[in-house]
Length: 211
Image (cartoon, rainbow, N blue to C red; front, side):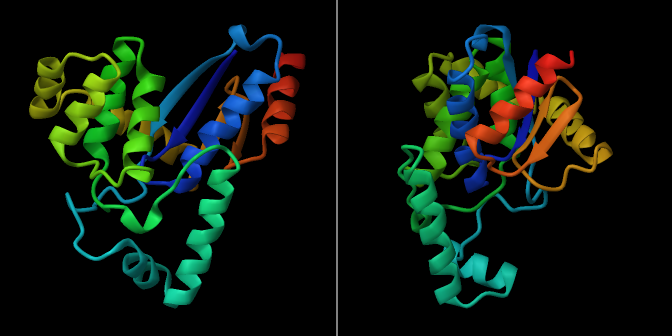
């Protein structure tokens, strides 16, 4: 059975969703029969390499919220993340383009390290305040999980795996996926949002029972 997950590095609910899926899979005695594939999705494909405004001001401007509303929302997300063992520092986030980070995940996947790369990038962004468009940050994350630094630099410099990112995004568009994370199980069942592990377990079990 295959689970495909469309998500963006810059989406706080996507990291929570990854943890929720991991919890769900641990509850299944047939976990080894399931493969998880991370698919690319950019919440803002037109984002610059780096935005200069602090994250709370960016969110207030984008969603027409007061600063108090932003603070309350960020606190709720941080508390939810903590329940999954994640230590979010949302006020430290550096907003920017995530296209190169997605390319790096595709590269890591060819080495059997796609999941580890996804995890490392999430941690760098949400827990360490790293900028996902900074190539030196990306190289450091790649070497942390055992990828070759020179090979990683070449990938980032040449634009390799850009077509794979665009293919994922085209599939998301063709299937009207507008929210992330979006989980697709067995190519037949889909759900969006950082779902509770129980919801994901039920969907996986339904897919398996009707295969």
